[in-house]
Image (tube, rainbow, N blue to C red; front, side, top):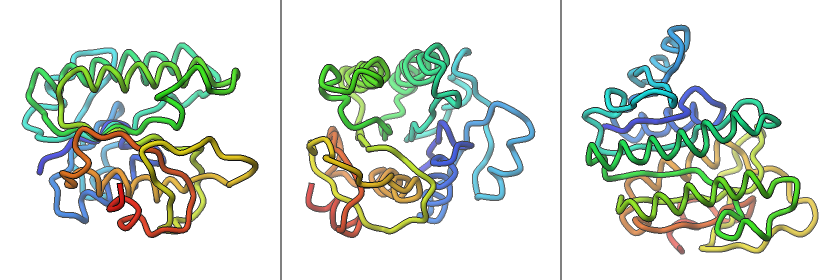
Length: 215
């Protein structure tokens, strides 16, 4: 399947690109700068220019699926977060619908299904993610929304905990490896049992494929 990865140049997105390529997909990696092309090509992807502030039809042309892992680089800049993870995501979803890019896997955040219960310091961001998730559901795509706890750059463990809704963690559980999250996203692309589904993931002790198979 030809799949576009939005957010391909990020720390999670690069793992997604690699896993999708290894699974035999034709991967298009969305880039904003010419100097990002070589890194994406080295991962087995075809770089395609795209910018969330501009029409995305060319970027998604010919694709049958998409994975959205784009996020604002400045986590303290709410305007940038809204532009990428809300306005940009809406534009991306609308373009998928218009071009009949049916399969969409979205990286979201734990608590997005009930943002008013989120901690005050993150509530505005979680609310934006929740709005985006709801917009995806309303657009009648074959979607999977993966809501993850805090991400980190620790080495992959290959182990997670997954459920339609997980309770907020009590105490310190550590960050979820970005590589493990990327593996979940890549596996979800081909898993028809996860079409039109949303679920939470966090660090756990169950192998990824097994945890996903239990959903």
